[in-house]
Image 1 (cartoon, rainbow, N blue to C red):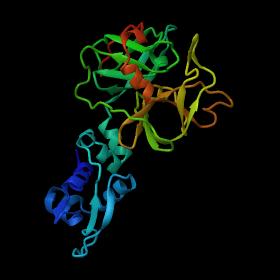
Image 2 (cartoon, helix red, strand yellow; image 1 turned 180 degrees about the vertical axis):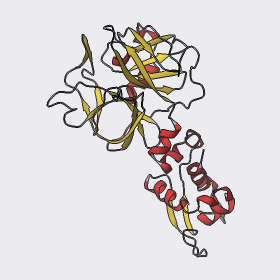
Image 3 (tube, rainbow, N blue to C red; image 1 turned 30 degrees about the horizontal axis):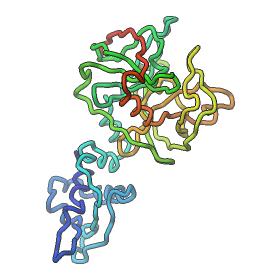
Image 4 (cartoon, rainbow, N blue to C red; image 1 turned 90 degrees about the vertical axis):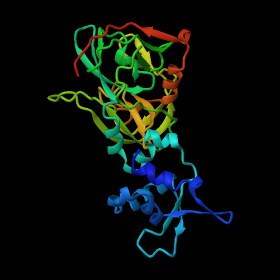
Length: 316
């Protein structure tokens, strides 16, 4: 927890002063009196408060007219402070933006390296969720000769996906959490036109594995009318809901998280092959909604396909 969480907690409505039965909000001057450890950030805190107001976390309620110093009299309320949200880091993510999200989850987005049956190598992306699991795209791991994640010597107990094969989602499950030291992503439903960031490992010629982070916006909710062929004999996304994103999906990003400004994953990147008049040519990427991931994670054994895999251990 950092400065964003401290600001939001301080102005939480439950902490407001009760003067004669009337709640009196605190001012920035009151905040500095209680949080002297943040005095060195005095020049950036007013801007952070404005960001939190724009994101409907704080409500500006006027000025304390007895305070003449610039910004010091500004008073705020946070009507819906949640300690769990603060512990996850969402208030700090909203305050400091994409660089803070990337820094926090830098090691929670992982390259999925595979060898295909013809001997060629390919790369995809996965991300960590609770329970010692890695979520990725089904087409990244299904029918591969070998699968590996750098730094993960422990072989998974299973790799599974929803029965039927239409959803481009898979989970790599471990009996022992292979990365207990790294933060795990939480998930939530998306909303239209929100700004998001993507994190993934597109193969860039001449470079080692490189985690690329990009900003985008969600463009629309759609339902596909036909399947997308991503490997011979396998069709995904047929008749399934998905989200359009106004950024092209780059090879290797498949399976990577699409992250909201609060640091929660709202979907994962699914790759549809480029066509002359297709979504990729128009500058859009396809995102599988997080509801499909949540459905898979909560599914009973009879509702899933256990995918065959051969694990290959790689050093970090």
